[in-house]
Length: 124
Image (cartoon, rainbow, N blue to C red; front, top):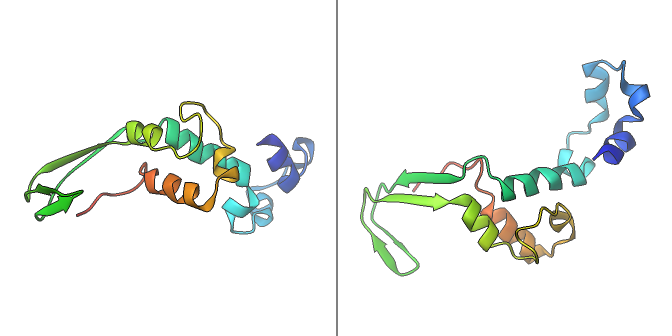
């Protein structure tokens, strides 16, 4: 991450006296493309230790999920960390490996994104 920051902002001794405005001018608006490894670290951190380890909600209508019927007002609880670890489409799901977000296939990325529930509001 330090190498990535240095490549964008210059070495620490150069940017130590930069103003917030000068630093923000360097960022081109596409953080994910400009800081791919930093983004991968953030995604992997949220996968291994999500902000919300559990999400819950109450159904607002009857619903069928995977062939199972759930009535309106049923409380649904999602264990996000368990789901992210068990559903990790790449090898070594229990290992902290930010590279998995950069080196993954399109299908693996789709599955990773599907499990990234840390900041999502669940509505039904």
